[in-house]
Image (cartoon, rainbow, N blue to C red):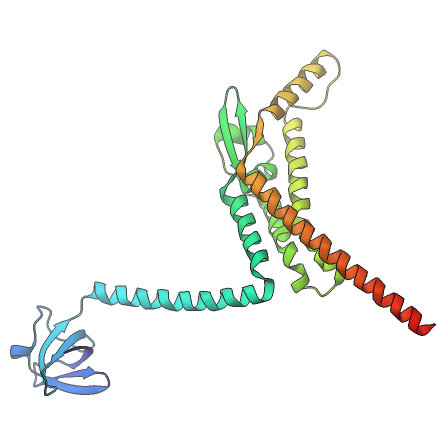
Length: 269
């Protein structure tokens, strides 16, 4: 039978000493030590016992195995804590709301929200987060040429604030807080308008005459070169879900408040 233990004292100046499950066992290097690594205090070992509980074999535990076991313990602990945290979040916010928020984050960061086909530059695909970076930049056309990925800046902060909107009623006890669920949809609408305006302004100021007609034609061609990706449709669906739930909760709360007011008025009369 083998058990995990630790060397307390090496056997060079007398019998060695092992600690196994809180008990100390003496051992000799001759006949018992089965590893090339010499015994030293603190060394992790596997100890074999005979039926009389006497040490008959000691083998060192490789550091790689110890590291793997420690990683497994840490992973198990992290899973346990993660499960506990997830249970608390589900209990507080509800599973549908959390799933919807997760889908929205995933679609904004990882899925293509739009693509742009330019004659000389080729085809470009963007996530919503990359689109925020282009909005934050001063010259989006130049960034397309360089295949850059600019920082989202202030737009990124506004995106995080919009994502927090559906959870606002849990942080702010006010009947209007439920309208926070409208923020993701409103933010996407504002971003869409801002992107359109930015692309149009990148072609220069509005001019009149023949050049104005050419400019408007170039703007129309650029808009036609845009096409929405799956990320856009998924994001719109999720933000509409939040908006509908938010509006419904607000109307229910308002109706309940009006009913309570009418009952108090009748009671007073």
